[in-house]
Length: 331
Image (cartoon, rainbow, N blue to C red; front, side, top):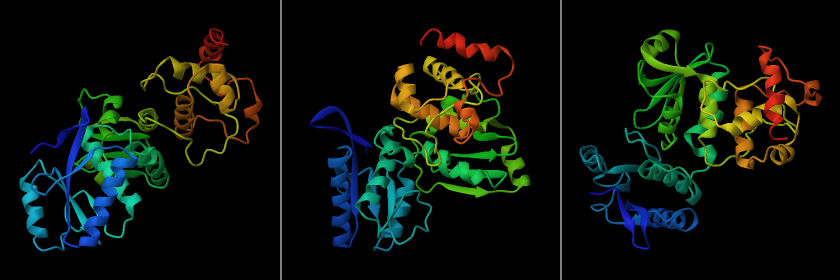
């Protein structure tokens, strides 16, 4: 069984075969309608087939033969089961609540599709792994020192907030860079993702001989891995200024990041002015501001430093003259 088939209208477009194996006719038709709406509104990637021909099957454990069907799915690695019902007490990573409306169903379909096509362009930023980390994990770790984050497909990572470190499910001597790991996370769905606090001893045992990186750098990379962006909740600034340079030696960056860093170290500006002066796209500017916000290098909106033309807390002295030298080339 093939996971995807070519779209007859576009030979380069991949289709994912899906079946709705529900005995309740109303639930089956409603779920099939959500799939058709997804194809019409978001992306035409789902192809309805019979259960025997599909790569993804939505089924109910409560239907006759439901438990047996799930057991057969475990033996067939090419088949992705999606539990439909009031609760998911199985080990199946995908679940659709039977009370979910079409919009909720389409969000889950987006997440499932991203694991097949390796493309999250049709997933809203806040529904992606990065969006999740930028929001819920960031808030969670503020009150907990040791955190485990479980994604589906057996991916996980640990956070030590006190040390500002994130530990990945990779060996200590893995050649995988921080940017590589973030790219690896991107196609993963957040559905059924779990965050939990763990004890110091649990963390010590789990993180031994695991690859680790700076947590703020991790958040920075996650922001820039997004395809689109809007300002995150909690950013109440009307003007923006940096209090220090980003950790550019530890994260992947391009010339635009250097320009934005230099500009906002030197000046306090609103988004329109930043775009106009730097000639950098709005999406990239918003990503930069979000990354700066998450990594705590933005000056507070009510700070008197917002109106200052001088860099703040910059050391060593060489950094004080770096911004003017860079900006002289573009302004």
